[in-house]
Image 1: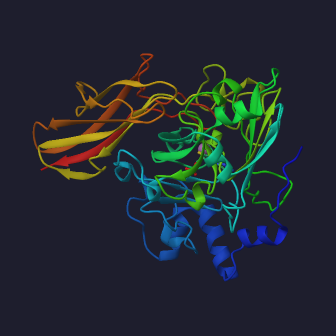
Image 2: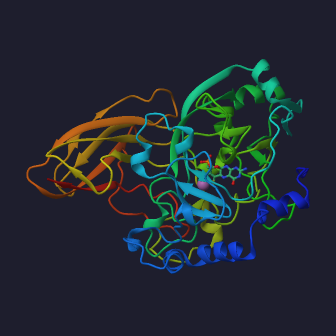
Image 3: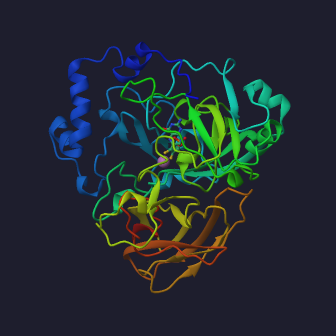
Length: 424
Ligand SMILES: Nc1nc2c(c(=O)[nH]1)N[C@H]1C(S)=C(S)[C@@H](COP(=O)(O)O)O[C@H]1N2
Ligand SMILES: [Mo]
């Protein structure tokens, strides 16, 4: 059964070409999107300092012709159609990511004029009893849970791929750990029943394809049924104790911690159960997939040799000091670490390019699926330039690598985060 899209063509066109935009604005935005910083420099009539250090396709928010980042604080806009914006590492310093600092990864145009009170979630397909539930039904009929959960885009870190990989050139900021409130998917599926031949879930959101074709979904992903039935997969209606941000999936979304962010369907309208691996848009081909064998950087890989990404690999982020900071000789270093479906056992920090390592103090996760906070103090031996590196090791003994395990679509870059400081 195809999801029935309520959004009519006019609405779609409003999404694509916001009213009040002149043709010049549209052309300018298109130009910016295509030419990236060269275009920005041309438009502002001067060189952009450190342009070479910025990711390809990067566009300062000020250059976008509308306030696409309303309600967000300090995010870097990578693309405005669809909206993609990441959070600089030093703005991810909080243990729980504030809503204003949660990255945005949209594949299409979010629904407009969302009516939370009238919103329904349909759960059907290979269930015993199909259900249609309002958000009030979810709140009153199921156990409500609040959990800090990591969402990381599968393409986080793509900017470092060489040869480059097409797609959003995320640096380190397509990750967040907000507190999500909702009901467990497993509880809802216990109510509908799961037929014995079910292997996969399929998720449908209310966003529209940018092409304007109302019959096509921008993205529809799913989960192996075993994963869907775990304790920390939430159908969430609140973010950090308040409403979900419009671009983060209001009024209802899935949150599947530790797996590629694409599993966490936003603007959730329907979940249906299937007896095959779900084959919706961005499930097949090379989307959110990596080669099933080691490949040479730049190698062409046949589509049938790709497999679906499941858990995200062990990773850490240095959130203080900020890259480029001026420091004293004694420097507090801190950040987060996570590993999909696992915990992190250790975080080590180096100030001498990996020659020696200092073990950081590492907190346990506040709940299953949360990132872990860590901290240490380093004493820099003399004034000068340093790089601080962090590396996490998870409960299965896997450690972050020094170099990228290249794949054609630029997924799963979990190399160590490095931050430069100058000691006075
Ligand atoms: N309906 C819908 N859900 C979606 C997406 C989308 O484009 N449409 N993007 C996915 C991807 S690729 C990621 S990484 C996460 C990002 O969640 P966020 O935008 O709240 O940070 O949402 C996922 N859920
Ligand atoms: Mo993503």
